[in-house]
Image (cartoon, rainbow, N blue to C red; front, side):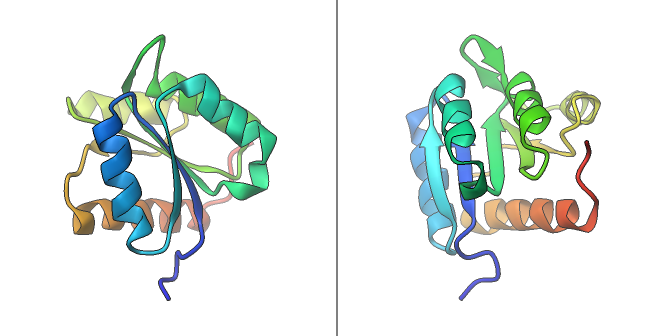
Length: 134
């Protein structure tokens, strides 16, 4: 059984293709992934059952908001949740902007299972090694 088995993950992306792709990728190694295409609905799900969720990953470009704004709202209400932003239009400035928003992990949208699972596992291990930010 994988060390990360059973962790609840919210994946937010307005592109249904990536929602399905990442759900299947992470389910393959034991994560319980719930994809959302709408930031408000994802935040409502987190608020309704905060203990269910360990990790929230968001695309950067979203309708009516950005992934960084969404993840900032997540961290403001739920400091225990590990957060990361991904983008198909990744550039080094995104890493700087993410850290300025209190989001320690940013990367290009991965498209293969080993790359994505390594990214998520590394993010979770790194955030567990540091105390949560208030």
